[in-house]
Length: 515
Image (cartoon, rainbow, N blue to C red; front, side, top):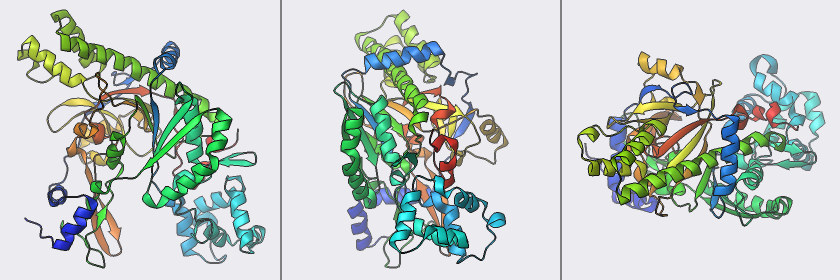
């Protein structure tokens, strides 16, 4: 069924960098849906899908990273575009429901009760008290009266502290005596510990929302010199935003384009998978990827720092082995060398050879192996499953029938299929978004990362807007389908490396308190 767009619609698409063909394909994706990912089995330590490292391995890869990273450009890439709104979901619900002190907080709002009881423990507490004083409101008086809704409004509302709409990266997470740090600053400190280059510089790149970019720049201007002097580094900090040409049209339940009150088409960001475009623009030999909210205070950082170096050391050693194999394949290989490379591809990298591989002659086999190995590489840390919602490591088979290791989100799985549900339930590990990547080939040229995306791995969800139900579409996730055709290894890392802050009360856990 053709979609009829007006001239003004076409101009709106062009302003976003979208072609009518791209938008029509998006609508077709809504109509057809995306195929569910076929799970073959969970990747585990027992079946070799996840590597468990010995103490000797840890020492070896740490030392290897120190030596092999000399002279290389290192970058820390941090998706940081999220606003903090969802962190305060329970507080918003409470403050919008109640005025004054007429409520039963213990029975109806246990999360709010915990927040109020421990409010003095939060790193932003002093700022809250000062903000209230600025408006002639005494924090103690409101607490004594039990007027907690007003206290919460001072924290969240834009005319006061505005914490509800600030980017998560700029909230005060951790306290160090009289000092407090934001996640932005904790990532700077982490970078100084494991991403410092030979010349003493540290490169960090944050993907941010357009409306938050000035706030990030302001914060960097305030703290950059302090951290450079404290850690004896030179900080190179850059920012980028999701590209508008990765936005996706919104449709109703009949898959018709949705329009706003002014008659304009509604487009939505394509999810974190859009950031493959931003990652594709980065120029570095080693790229660490980690989410903005997964940070801990200094007393907890040691394990994270060690394992970042371990993952990077493993990446560099694997890269060396793959590059050597590619150079051999270029020169021409003996049958013995060919078998050795076949073994590495199948057993070490868990890459399935093409179905017609056995019928091919040695030259054709060498060409196939070259294609399988000449790809971006990622090493992904995995933590033991603690019941967290989100993706995990699996052996999968894609729409072309190819078996591979993938990080799969639960939304990509057919939960109505008992066999698929059983495989999901058997997963032992969880994806904490802890990646180290190589995006250059063996000849020193950068891969076009967009060529290694599996477009069939997007997914569709429904959202409410007033009385209307909208369907929204997400691009293949950054560490899911956007990296589907990369060379992938999964490595077990300690749970101590994974301490995300999803709700404000997560900051009350011992991992986020002063040591």
